[in-house]
Amino acid sequence: MSTTDNKEQGIAPPTGDMSAAEFRRYGYKIVDWIADYFERIEQLPVLSQAEPGELVSQLPTAAPANGESMDDILRDIDRLILPAVTHWSHPSFFAYFSTSTSAPGIFGEMLSAAFDMKAMLWRTSPASTELEEVALRWLRQLMNLPPEFEGIIYDTASVSSMHAVAAARERLNLRIREDGMSGRDDLPLLRVYVSEQAHSSIEKGVITLGLGQRSLCKVQTDAEFRMDAEALRQAIEDDKARGAIPCCVVATVGTTSTSSIDPVNAIADICAEHGVWLHVDAAYAGSAALVPELQPLMAGCERADSLVTNPHKWLFTPFDLSVLYCRDMEMLRRAFSLVPEYLRTTESSDAVRNGMDYGIQLGRRFRALKLWMILRYFGHHGLAARLREHCRLARLFASWVEQSSDWELLAPTPFSLVCFRACPAKPDEPHDARATRLDALNETLMNNINSTGAAYLSHTRLGDVFTLRLAIGNIRTTEAHISRVWELLNEEAARLS
Ligand code: PLP
Image (cartoon, rainbow, N blue to C red; front, side, top):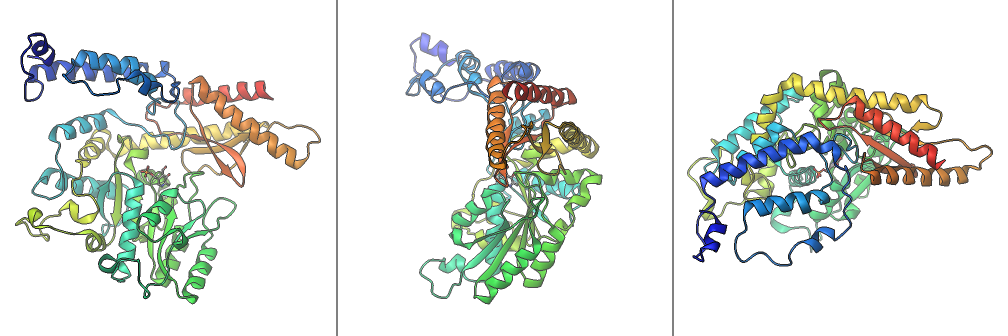
């Protein structure tokens, strides 16, 4: 009997969950809804056309006293929620790092929600703990990373990298776990080195760990946005000379703005020389290691102490799932393990892994299930073919940009991200006026295209130049979508010039 039936008959609300029959009925309906959604997604505007506050203003200010019918709830998903969705699964979503879910990943999420396990101890979640080991071993092998790397799943790269820096700090043996960092005269400045193109998540991790922003050293980059290894060496030597302690270097393979690749081998040499922890942020580009011919771009990663890659970025895994590989998991355990009486179990920590020992979270979602299902469903060759195609599409788009005198590339395209801008000429224009005109033109161009809902691009600034970014990573994106956005860009640029 449904909640609505009870309400109509004026009896006390039922206890317990939805009946199996009702679950089945709405479960099939929701799966149909999702299949229809993917079939019609191209008719929806990529960027939600909702105004700020629009959804809130259409929903009641308080939760219902009595349960409502699933039919009413689903109707509101169509009527109210859908218009406020920016469709990350749309094949013309080219902003940020374009990512996408996939059918096996969605099924994995459904099953994981049904099991609802909190993978803190092996005992509370043997399947989650052991499937995590298996899926991460498979992924490591596919990425051609060394067997010494053990993996752990967190939610996001921000959290993975924060844990890596915490492990690096633990390795310094400064009793920070016990004594903290405040009120200590015996603690010199600890330094974390990134390139000036590194993701802001590293700085946030440094803030979270109490190291403070002054601990972060942003090393200059070269003309192709890669960390200048000699400048890193100099920074480390200068820091040591003034008594600071180098704690961790974060190299990026696939930076957020341009997908540039830091010289990991040269950086690894410097880290080895100075005994500094090397963490590689391959949040986006790590997936490219599944494509054999792209593996050389990862050279040196095998020498890192830790590496993060995000299957939720470019491996068709529904958000969230970030993998941290670490050469010495004991550092993470030393930094984070804390076992109160009520969580003690008889399994020895040599025999089983208890996920709660390796991070700030106690309960952990069963994320490994969706990754394992994706690896099985698509297989290595299926995944590599999709990633390879994304890179081909990016190179194709970049070739159109290069061949046109009205457009220019602003960074190399090693993976599936193109950085470019419109640059129609105007005779006898002074340099500064040109720079201002092109910045304004490209910003308007991007905003106008995004507001049509036909495609969604984002931007960055490179050397103070407003730069358009076309990121390809969606499982549904084809050459037709790339051609269409190129047409749109040209039409709009012609209209604005
Ligand atoms: N690192 C890089 C290179 C990124 O591009 C991003 C996000 O785009 C992140 C880290 C942060 O990712 P997350 O959202 O998983 O924290």
